[in-house]
Image (cartoon, rainbow, N blue to C red; front, top):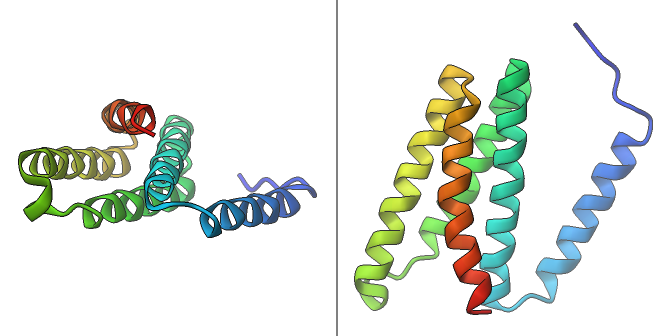
Length: 130
């Protein structure tokens, strides 16, 4: 069933884009990674909710966004300088990507929630070293 977007939805989306752009412009490298985590967690919440509603279009959009963000986190790793820690993070990001793909394929919110839990723990640790 088609549901029209509320009239303020477009304005809200524009505001969120401007807010994120402003935060990115003045961010340090550490803050940029924190923003990626924040966006990943928000997107995984959206993926989980869309999967629970069986909203296939939003599942696909959230899945693509989540995979893109996790890919960005993975690309930010320096395996040579980061050693074992970077390798472990790469494994976590691969597993999170696998769970995100499973969430989209099965429309099972649990997979998105598991990926969120994994990334949430890393995000908390990252923010703690701020």
